[in-house]
Length: 260
Ligand SMILES: C[S@@+](CC[C@H](N)C(=O)[O-])C[C@H]1O[C@@H](n2cnc3c(N)ncnc32)[C@H](O)[C@@H]1O
Image 1: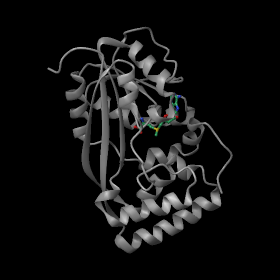
Image 2: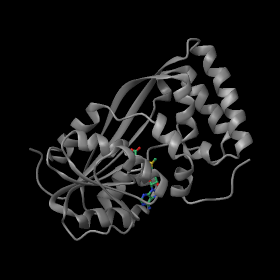
Image 3: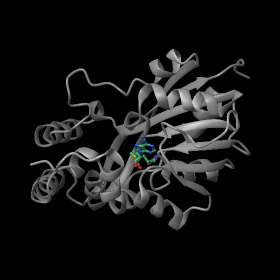
């Protein structure tokens, strides 16, 4: 059974604790690719991180010297971010950015753009970045084609979660941010970054709870899913230490200028 329909920020607010505890960080290679494709050094760059959530992307950007404003519609997600991140935060809608024109070098959507309006959001980002600025979206996801156990896990999730979006769906693809950015007149480049996540089974299950399609199950269905997944995954990782193939899709749209 699935809960009554909620806005995405309400869903994430309900699972903010699990999100904060167990979602993975982004690999170093993602930030290097972001700098390369945008032509912008993160050190000193002004960044608006839209859909900042609990701050995984925000802290990655801050750690590399960026000056970040973290923006989200979810009060509880932002509270988690504030608890361990020193930066300006804004409770606001990413479809109507509360900034003047041209005040930022980068607007980023980490794991977030698919929750926004595809046209309004990019138009706002284009307005807010400088003439040399860029807009970037990325998604960290499991690389199900790399391991049979992971592909099987995704099929089970697709079978039990009505709102499942992921590689087990026929014709599944990444959100069409590259097309949206090109339609808005940006010069777009895309790349994939492959990496491996070492994670404890308990944390992997907590991470699962924070995915919107699991978070929208009712409590009993969610607990049953956790029991089943613990049993299935223990067959593969008897010692509770998992190795999970991952990949990040990154799309960057530049307003102008040539690659350095
Ligand atoms: C999957 S989380 C991504 C969090 C973070 N960027 C990360 O890398 O983990 C998506 C976030 O987008 C936020 N969100 C959804 N719709 C939004 C909107 N219209 N404006 C701003 N944030 C939004 C949700 O509240 C949630 O915190």
